[in-house]
Image: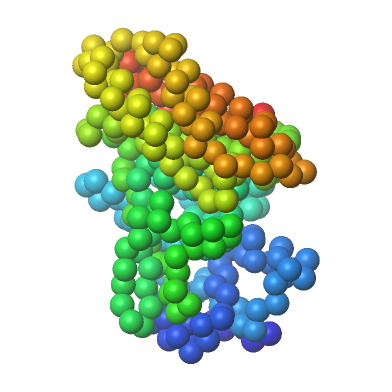
Length: 301
């Protein structure tokens, strides 16, 4: 196994073009586990820690440009006001040591359906900027996941930035695990209110071959909120609407039975999380919340 250490982004792209099978590594929280258990034996590892721009972020007028190697700890400490859903999800990742090393770019590259950042990225609205020596392209995050642990990257491409919409309303994240910390999600759910467009977006994790949005549930809820004038009158969402939303979120799932939970349990749990998180964010919206608080936030149960 050869170890590549590019000192710049240009060197990294050139190395990836020359060695398409090279596996990028920054935090290594997924890759090193696979290597240690002999689940993967790449011919080349490419250390990206010396590429400075991958550790940077920029808060713009409408979006946050997040470097692929920005750690979960940095997101929690520095970006919670503008990316509250992602910050809540980051709180549930592993241990403090893992949060100091792991990154959203690594989560995207691994493309595990159980990745904690995926529901938050889907709910917030994100695009993945990838690059090769051939050029740059931007991939909507919902199109980035192509199968179980498979993504839309070409062999010579690397993730450089993740562009995420700044929160203009409350966001939430909830996760069910076999214990309260340091656990792979049995299932997870993210939700975000976007008052500017009067829409709600969702993200479901570990309940299908890929992370996904519950689009039928979103369409139903968006129509119900608009038809009932809820964005303007601020009334409580009726229980019947919340139940239907939850059922549609459950219906979006296509889970499996495994050692962490049954398919039936996962569908049920996603519906419960959908109903609860909808209640949390709508109460925050009614109270004038801007999505910056974490009350009732990310939970492992």
